[in-house]
Length: 366
Ligand code: ATP
Ligand code: MG
Image (cartoon, rainbow, N blue to C red; front, side):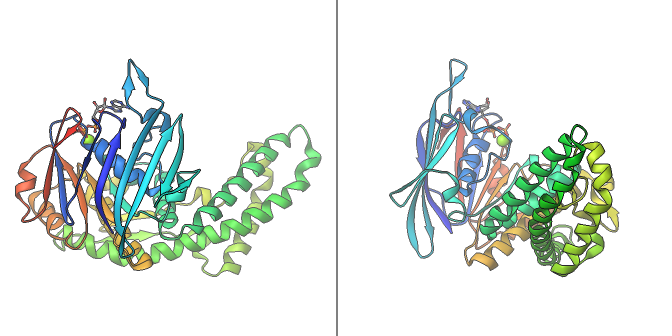
């Protein structure tokens, strides 16, 4: 898929306007704090995802006199499924609504699956640097885009988890409630098994692809591995369900004392290694950046295979900390895809043979 046009009004610091990106590499350049990442974020929001910088929807409209305006609106002409499609995203009073080819939708999530993108930003380095929740969010985010039905499975799991935790907190005052945990355990097992299976299948797909891309970035000097193997690496549905059920039973008394559920997919991790060592503990800045990049580009390949459409690639400030050979690999292995890449140094633009440049200054895009 290709973004043919992007329009923005009252969004962050961007002056109302529109851009017409090219089909290959689009470089968004300019000094710090001019609006480059804001432009990338405007594109990203069409995936239906949240701001990748953790900004609340109510804080996205332009600030006027220290207060956010009530609304911002974004529009996109997208070439996908063999034709042009018109998408619109409205952010009003912290709520989203959308218009897809002239049909109004009450939610922003109606856009999920319409527009697919993969984003890499400095925040995503936390995927290697921080604890497991970032890595789970990466897996779940990728799964939601490639199979929108997964969004519902995950929501059911999280709801059951919340309800079980609420009950656990009540148990010290009402010990007789402990038996009613069975209902929530059943639901956790039902949806949790599916979450684990989907994540495991995705990781199996992801590993060889990410490893190959990483070898390219690192000029075959380093090898990475990915491992997601909850419940002792149980593979079949029955096996996962049985082990999850057993783990919940074993942890039940401790959970009742602690007031939360200590086992299940909400505690899983994806282990990443570089040459056999933990990427989190031992990876250098450049290695950590490269492994996240490899994961993201591999995610894009999987999305392409599953949906038949190439996702748009958004790279925010990816070049810093990469040496020349790593930069070179990146710029020359993105062909055939539409890419938006932000940078401060226009020299980067000159490294490319083709592509379109956008200069951002004080919110104005030229
Ligand atoms: P850098 O090179 O440092 O990453 P950038 O060009 O990517 O810079 P952005 O993150 O896009 O910069 O932000 C540009 C400016 O937008 C910031 O100075 C910020 O204060 C401003 N900004 C963020 N949110 C809003 C908003 N809701 N209204 C107005 N301005 C905003
Ligand atoms: Mg930026």
